[in-house]
Every structure is written in C-alpha cells, then in structure tokens.
Length: 413
Picture 1: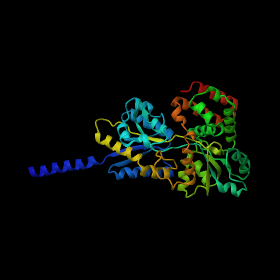
Picture 2: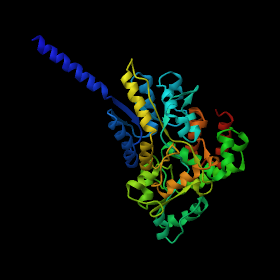
Picture 3: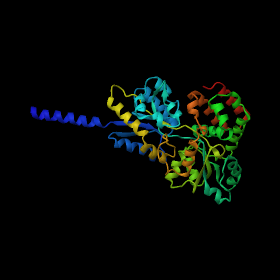
Picture 4: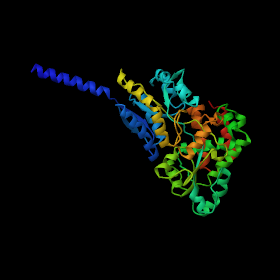
C-alpha cells in the first residue's frame, strides 16, 4: 500500500512539474475584424510554439475594451497581457505599481537599438523604466480608394483631397456614397485629426499637438481644416451613425463608396477580401497632400499577477520577447497592414501601400507623435467631444467650432 501511495505521490509531482512548464496566459485585445484576427493569430501561434498557451480575450471595440481592461486590473483580476494604444492610456496603472517592469528584458535584448522611431519606446517608459513593448506603427493618415468606382464612372482616381472633394458630386449622382464613415466616436475623432496635419501641414500640427499653441489653433490653417470637415460631412450616407470601421471599409471594397479615411489597419480587410493595392484599391497617405505618419500604434503591457507567481512573470517575459522578434514583427504586420517597429526586418514582400509607409519612415521629419502621446486622456476626451459634435451637427458653424478648439488647446496638457 505504501508503495502504491509512493508511486501516486511521485506521479502527482511529475504532473505538477510538467504543467508548470506551460503557462496559460490570458491576452486581452480589441482586434476582432477579419484582418485583425488573421494578424493576432501570428502572435498566438508563436506563443503556443514556445510551450505556453495563449488564451484569447478579444473584446470588440477599443472604446469598450479599455474601461473593461482597466477595471479588471484595478479590481484585482488582472489578465496576463493586454493591448493598449502606444501612448499614455496605461500611465496611471504603471504609476500605481500594477504593471510588470520589462526594463531588464529590454536592456538585455537591446530594444533601444532596434525599435524605431525612438519615441515608441519612450512612450513605454515611465521614470526611466520600460513597462510595455510596442508591436507596430499605426497611422490614421490614410485615405483608401476604390479604383473601379472612379474608372467605371469616367473619372480619374483622385490623387489628393481636393480632387476627391471635386469628384464627390458626380459620385453622388451615380448612386455611390463619396465618403464611407463609421460613426463611432474614435473614428470621427481620428479622421478629424487627419485633416489637421494633411491640410494644415507638419508645422501647424507640431505647434498644436506638441507646443499647445493657441495662435496656431486660431490660425487660418485651422479654419481651412474645419471647413474641410464641414465639407466631408456632406459626403456621407445617412447610415453612418454607429457603423463599425470595418463595415465602412467594406463599403469601399464592394464599390458602395468611393473612399474612406481610416488607419492603415484597413489594409487587412482589403487583403482578406483578396484585393491588391494598386489594382482594385489605392491609398493616399496624408490625403495625398502631406504624406506623413503619426507614430500611433499598439503596445502590450503585462499586469502584475496576484501573489508570487514567478512562472507567470516568466511567461510574460517570453511573450514580450516574442512580440518584438523579427519573425513575429514581419508576420504580424504583413497581416495587420501596419508597419514594424523594427528597422532591421525584411519587408520586401509588403504591398505598394505599405511600401509608401516604409518610405515615409525613412525621413524622420515626416514622422509625428500621435495625439495619444501628446495629450492627456482628459484633453483627448475634450477634443473627441468637439470633433464628434461638429461632424454630427451641421448647425455648428466653423467659427463656433474653432473657438471651442482654441479654448481646449489653451488648457491642454
């Protein structure tokens, strides 16, 4: 009997040791569209191959996901890893001591030497310590066009915003919505921000977003921006309110709309639909006026586990290392439509639109910080409220909207 008990005890120890080698890590994110799901699978597969297990915790919509993620972390129910935008979204959680410190790993692997532009890693750094790993460079400064829609209606494919606006009335006559828009607040906010740099120029963008210049906010350049947004709201269909971004992208893919102003992640939807850049669709960085990119994007943070769980922290470090590896950087970003954070990877197979983005990155003067990196969440919220209200309400004049914009920038942090 003692022998049997001894064997059972030994078996239990071996089973426990075996299971301890593989850690299940719940990973929360808001990548749920077809193109996004294909991209996140690259990360999950790589982590599973390491001997651990990726437990997918997808939550549709960043606006829905962020408060849920924050609530779980502050409420004592942390996930193993979570997506946030590269910026200040998780700053309070870091300062509260709720995030795993990645500094030792970052220094060991030389992240400062391989991640570009430098401001991406800076956005993950608080008081000299690294708390997240950026995984891509996303920019909203893109317009996506259905080439066939224009060609079938006897028009040249627009090369900039002015040509797009000039073609809008003829598209309407043909029964095509000129501008596909999703009515979620973040979509309207970021579309409006795109007009700031695309039409106002790099210096005006820096003056407002970095230097918080009231004079720039009140300038004729910003008046031009507000006029363009007012013009854009006349190009949408009645069903845009509440529409998901990928549904708006699908309007362009299927020829129901001429174009969409949306981040480079839209490329993932075109790819899933079997369309090719330069053939069925085209792209205009900076709306074809100022071809610039802001360095927004996604980063992964690793909430501290409850209790002393070194095996969980070890798995977190393994995932963090994989996310910035060459293999994952290439595979993930080719699926996602975003640009890699590493400058030493082979992106020769990237499509023509991604190649445009890579070319822009070669000149750092054309690479700008995103609003998520330069404004506090409070200021971001005020700007979002203004952009959304102005776009949705044609009774608000350009003059009134710009006056409110100036007031927000005056007290921006």
